[in-house]
Amino acid sequence: MVAVESTEIVEIARAETERGDVVLRRRPSEAGADVLELRVNGVFVMDTLETTSEIELAAQALELVDDPRSVLIGGLGLGFTLQRVLADPRVERAAVVEIEEPLIRWMREGTVPHGPAILADRRATIVNADIAMAIAEARSTYDLVLLDVDNGPGYLVHQANEAVYEEHFLQQCRDLLSPGGVLVIWSGNPAPELLEVMREVFGAAEEQRHDVLLQDRPEGYYLYLARST
Image 1 (tube, rainbow, N blue to C red):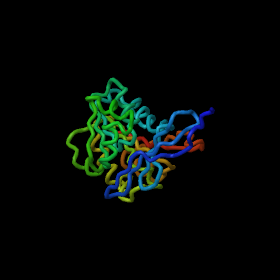
Image 2: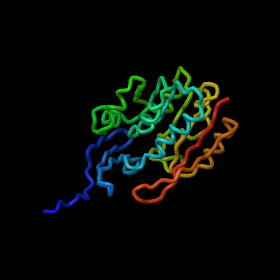
Image 3: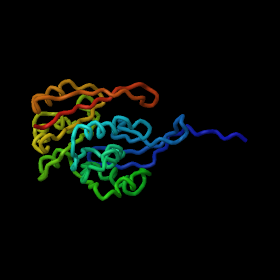
Image 4: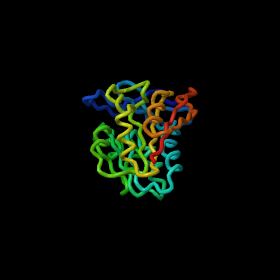
């Protein structure tokens, strides 16, 4: 008897928050292993198949700082940015700010299978809060600030996240960085206005495009980088 591979997409976790629904789905892939997919308000956010840009968010920033002891990450996602940060032995402290408590719980409890191992690292601290509030209330400085809290300024999942890409918030990020520290922002689409505002705030900023395959479709993701003086 020949086994037939399932093509079914299965919802494995769902939570309703004041911002809408947060959903984890499992789908099959041509490679054989199932893929875990995160959606917010019906919008695809990320999955476990194409993680290049989440990892590059950390990798590119870590290369720019000689001694990245402390790192602040806005957005836990499925943990790949945090995992890459913790893979760097120079990092002594990594704080992650995530607004959706169910996502934190799913990572801790193993609903996201690789979650418990990542969060077990004693250098990692998870804060359930809005990133804008966390940045405004921060009392320590960081060598790196990595932001992946939405799909970018041109394709917002939550309209309130628009403030994350504006001058006032970026100034707060700059003030939070130690001398020579780096801010990196992830975007799913080109964001020329964000690049311009970052240049106004920091004096200089850079755009990097990363080509990826997303569910067999060629896509381009973007990183925006700036350094404090």
